[in-house]
Image (spheres, rainbow, N blue to C red):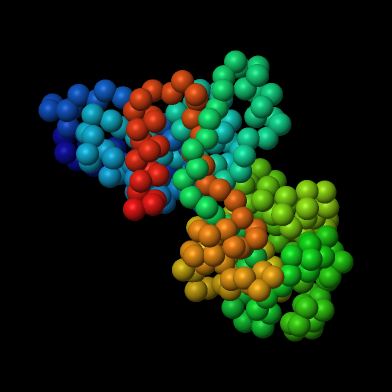
Length: 269
């Protein structure tokens, strides 16, 4: 029986969900909580879920995510397939129309401040750029690193996919909500975006800070003289900023609301 349970737990882990240990003989499961989240929020949510289940064995929490999770996380709340959605962007017009159609209201609880950070290869000599220069690079006006103090090397512009929270923040702040990314750019998922900056000296890309914190295989670019770190992001000094938020239905159960409060406490302790 133990062998069967171990195999089942391994299957759940490989599927991207939290392994849950429940003693069916001594603990009655009272509620399941399904959480879907953007990649930038997975670590804190999985750690919080494990701690919460240790203290409340009658609750089972499953955390899943994807590289393009912000849009889908909020959508899953509206459609009723998740209880909590972790997102690094606010609900958009598509979400608002879905809420109206389904007759539901979604509320958000901010977990922490975050930032979207431009990243390059460690060998790139460019240390800092201005917001104006970033915009010029991403719309195709600046095409060579030598134009911003770097090597004589064509810039490989890498953008995240349009359904990510990072793309929404970058588009709103760097591109000022109206400019279009150059058609010469490569559009990649979060993991591939980071990999490009780690392996290609020509690349400029961007990622949520929580996805690259402590990554020594790439370099975070200083923006308008401000470095992205825990302090500058917490104080909202770094300009390309956003909030990591947990969304749920307004009439969610008490246990859902309790878990959201628990996550907030874990982040701020």
